[in-house]
Length: 439
Image: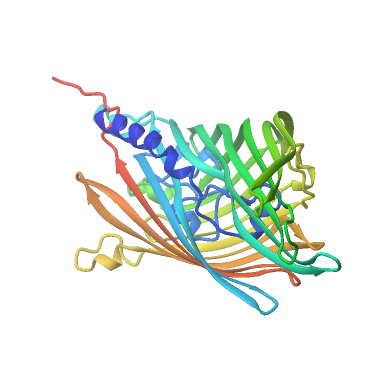
């Protein structure tokens, strides 16, 4: 059990790190910024199979029914780095960003080793999970200039940072081929915004500075189901083996969830020549409410255990129903479609390590909820990844490496061509909650 407490300590000590977003995206100024779908490891490099993906070795937070399939206690940590090439008309910029992406500890309450020790087979399994993931990120630094009659040159600067995060407790219960799961999450976070207007050609002018801070609190729930049908059950029984050809379908759903906000703002006029500051308006402890959109997610996956798997996924969110009294933006409904596959040349190879590596490929297209100049953002990306097995304390674990190449934007807005690298570590252990027996 010392390993369990060690993982929990690491989980919560990392909260300050995961709560420091390093993104720099002009489009994060709109709505809640960059909304993050919690897709880990293998699924992230296979088109985002968040609705159906499940495995013995890793959890899928996007569908809590996946916890019912776990046979190993799993500690997952992920991080990313991103290089964006931004282009607007003749202006270009290169931006680097990155951060800790997720932390998750998942435990099968019923350890399958107990079944072997007691020489029995149970039709029921239960997995539980606690995780910390970002829900949305904001990070931008924008400048614009124009010439106005009677005022001359005017320089405007806009900056924003922060985001919201989820601490999630999830459970999945599996009976025979059917699994049901439920996630309960606490939403929290803080966003900070500042805008500056500087009149460059005026003497002894007052430049204006507007700042606003918003704190979020709320609760989110989502539920999911996964059904897995063995296609070779009879032949596997004749050989006294487990089925290896499996077809799965998964569905997850979250209704609209409400949240509360507390905000403050300050509007200050500065005269740098006379070193004078005048607070023209301010407000503190302003309470507000909001509504997050409903979401549904569906996927199908076929896998030949230890050899290959492939699948497709479709998700939709009703962002047109989004409300936020502290910071209102008009958003549109969004949808996402993707698919991919993973392949292991020879999982039992003893002569070649790279034949035991899983190679992954995926494609994904997203209609983003944010609207710029009347046009809805789109995002297309191609994904590559590998899962490299290694032994940690005599247990098989995984190093997941992924690369996403993508392009997003609107026809008349800023074009963002990006390269994103993902690094995830999955540590497994199947020796927890073993019921020791002595003769």
